[in-house]
Amino acid sequence: MAKDKSIFTCTECGGTSARWMGKCPHCEAWNSLIEGAAEPAAGKNRFGSAHASLAPTSPVLPLSEIEAADFERHPTGIDELDRVLGGGMVEGGVVLIGGDPGIGKSTLLLQAVDALQRSGMQTLYVTGEESGAQVALRSRRLGLMASQVSVLPEIQLEKILHTLQARQPGIAIIDSIQTVYSDQLTSAPGSVAQVRECAAHLTRTAKATGTTIVLVGHVTKEGALAGPRVLEHMVDTVLYFEGDTHSNFRLIRAIKNRFGAVNEIGVFAMTEKGLKGVSNPSAIFLSQHSEPVPGSCVMVTLEGTRPLLVEIQALVDSGGPSPRRLSVGLDRDRLAMLLAVLHRHAGVACMDQDVFVNAVGGVRISEPAADLAVMLAITSSLRGKALPKGFIAFGEVGLAGEVRPAPRGQDRLKEAAKLGFQVAIVPKANAPKKNDKAFEGLTIHPVERIEEAMNLVRSMG
Image (tube, rainbow, N blue to C red; front, side, top):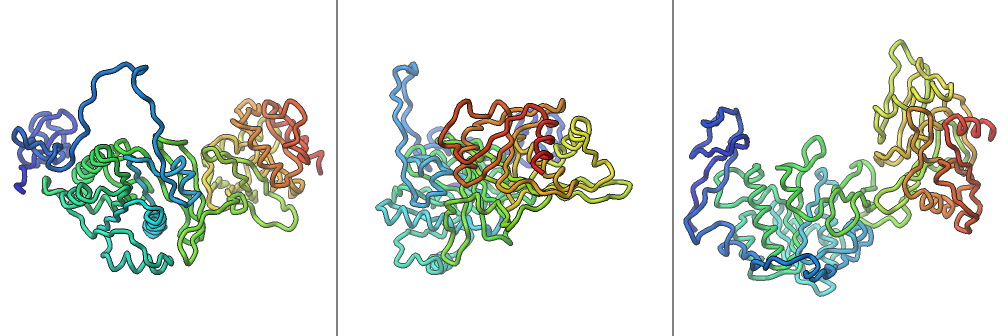
């Protein structure tokens, strides 16, 4: 196949150049030229049938006349993965999954694609980082004996697209998109131009043929997906694999999902036979104290549609002339704000103390509903007195000292009652309006201000 000439386009002014230059010859912006394939002659468009046939053009119709059919889903058989995806793989959908090296991306996808193949779906696993023998060795290690998943060790885009057109699989795994390159470009695999161009062709193939394509993506040292940000805009679903490589537990979080809820999480445990779903993830984020200890407060956070109980731990110790504020799993700037509110409205001073706050289990909590639990944990550590056994709290705290409601407060309380908690301090707006059997055994104390919450805790001993 003849290679088209490359052309370099300026990201600032849109001007073009036949060769790369440090400075754009049109607007004189530095380092703004990005490589792309030159437009070929008529009838040889690189987005045409030579690589991936596009769906036929549809007529212009009003929304009321367009048939709104539900997308057919194919469950992978891995409940936690299906939860994050919104119920399973969608026909013609494109999923991008990223995570740190060695965290388990390839392991989980090999388990999922094997389960889909055993259910009768035609599958294809394209590996660009490993040989076929290495993939086979992993499948034996995972106990996937006699697996019939088709494996293609290949990194050239045109050969991958030809195989997809010939075999028409129901699902194809591309591991990874950073290793794939197109003959249309001269840049190395993994470059911005190659990743963008290859992802665009694979996305068009998925939409035209109905094949579900899963792209494995590398991440940068900051934890973001490597490559152009347009990669996340192209695909239908973006999943992040999180977790400490020194821990057996892994989280998959949906950052974007056109077919389901965002911020949904799936919890897995890494075992000798691969990743196994965790049915009760709250147990991971709760320390196993035989008796209550100072500086510990349990809160109920929401991850997508799932309420999770997480233990917040605080340690307040005498500091030097410049006391430290350190938080793990929580926003450090918000911690400084909460300490100021605690001093101003509750009379609890920590200006000469080191304050350390940690969310147990490595979970990251970004919602402000953790405010009340953080402040109660800090106060408990400072006083040296533990909160009552079976105690939970949640709620956002404002700068004026008011306790604001958290979304889906009833669901949070039901989860706490189901797990046997007995005492709860919650925003007044989240308190149940009437007696409900779902809250049996749980004594709920509604509060409107942080002072009320502190007085309640002191009265509990």
